[in-house]
Every structure is written in C-alpha cells, then in structure tokens.
Length: 347
Ligand code: SF4
Image 1: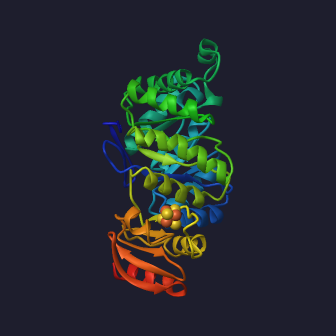
Image 2 (image 1 turned 45 degrees about the vertical axis):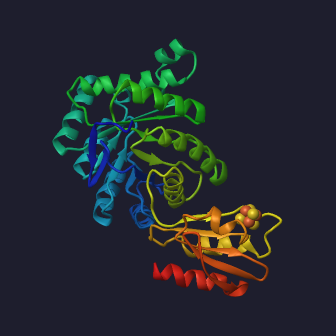
Image 3 (image 1 turned 120 degrees about the horizontal axis):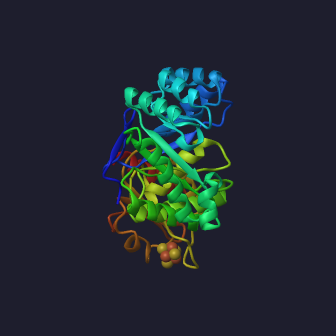
C-alpha cells in the first residue's frame, strides 16, 4: 500500500514504489554551521538518505546553505511558525520543507510558501503529532486519537490544495505505538500521499528501538511507509543504523549482512555468544548481501540455517564450517572466527 503518488526530495524519490528511504535529524545547534556540517557528514557516511535540520531563524538558513555545499544528501528544513523561514530555506537550497500550513497564519502566507515550493520543485511534509492536533478536532474526538491525527493532517492538506499544491508527504506521529499504527493505517486508506513513518518521542536507545520496531515494523509489514525516521534519545547516527535494521528485519530493504544466530541451549559447547558478537561487530560495515549463520551445535545448526551462504556450527572444542546446509570442513574452536572471516572474504 505504498503510496502511488511520488515526490522527489533532491535525488531521493519518496513513494510510488521507490525504495523506503532512511532519514534522521540533526541535533546540533541550528546556527552552529561547523557542528551541523560535521554531524551531517557522519549521517551521510552512515547511509542516511535524507537529513532534516530545524530552521528557527536566519542563522539556521545559512546552515542549510552550508549543508547543501557539504553533503549530497537532500536537506529538509523544519519550520515551525515563521513562514518567512520556509521561503528563505527554499531559496537557500532546501530540498524539502517540513511545515504545517495551519500554523503559519493567513492564507496569503500559505500561498507564498506553496508558490515558492512549486517554483523550486520541492515537496512539503505535513507533520502532525499528538501535541499539534487543532483544538476543534481535539474537542470532537476528546483525545489525539488516530482519527483526530488523520483529520488534522487532512486539514493541513486542504490548505495546500487550495493553492493547487500537491507534492505532499504526511507524517502522523504519536508516542503511543498503537495510536500511531492505527493512524497510519487509516491515512493509507484516506489519501494517496507518501507517508513518512515513525514513532515520536520513542525514548532512549533500547525502548526507543523496541517501540520503533513494533510500530514502524507493523506498518512496513502492511506495505505502509515510504520513508522512515527512527526517533531515539541518542546520537542520530544510531537512528540510521536502527532504521536500516528495521528495514532488514521486515525484509523490506536489504543492506549488508543478515546475521542468523541461535539462542544457544544445553547442547552448546563453545563460546557462541562471544563468537556471534564478534562476527556481528566485524561485519557491521560489510556491504555484501549475504546471510551468515553462527549456530551452537552441529546437530541442528546446519539444517536450521540451511539458507545461510556461509556459517559455523559449534561442536566440542571445534566447529563445522557449512554453506547452504552442506558441511565444508571441521575447524578448531580458536580458529573458527578467522576461518569464517576468510570464507566471507571469498564471497
Ligand atoms: Fe541448541 Fe543447536 Fe538449536 Fe543452537 S542450534 S539452540 S545449540 S539445538
């Protein structure tokens, strides 16, 4: 149910069957060009495909221009209430604007932003969240429910459509995983705009990742979602890794190695937990689209991981190297890691 409609932010297509893209947001001070550029470069090298930065004032507009010079990843300007910042950011080269037209005042301001974005051929993301739902809609539903979020988003969509602007992406964020998932499902049935999916204020690394996996994962499994942002109270680079891991876990988009490892049990006679952690760490930047298995025993390992391109299964003081379920050779436990890595090199 990925949207049929497609928009373009810089060199990244969103919706219309394009690969689900990964984005994050800078958390460096908006006016600190050096810090923002440094973080954007780190995000770019981690594989981030869209970078958002807040634009509260003119110093941040200069940051947008500097970011455009420094990275080739599209830059999204996040605007809150000042429509002039949207106009300035678009002039400075922003590839997309994130703004809720209902928050910027009279119609002439909405028209000015819509006209500028049309002229620059950049899309606008409408980002609704539980805290931003209009009072009248809140009064109707009594709480920021899924219906309330969708109605709020459609109100903002209507304001842009009034000025014939339709290059829209929508996000409906709630810190409640249930509400967010329901809202995105309802939105996917309500209109055909690309959806930016995420769970807002998801929390610190562990719970944030779990909530995001449950929420974003459920939506992706339904075929909903065109671009993903995992929100973590952590370094944004970790958001990028997390987003790719969710895409990988849901089989929506593969990047790098798929590591299969067993939970260990009473049959395990080698340090499998240590070995699996070592292998995962060694392969974290490996771009080969392969499945690697690290299994605890030779009785079940090769069979359970029969799809693995290469794998090891532990024995008593030794391990078996296998490929596609077939045993290749027996290796001493202390040489398992090195031999496995050598085989991966060859693939
Ligand atoms: Fe236990 Fe072997 Fe299964 Fe691992 S692969 S959980 S060691 S039976």
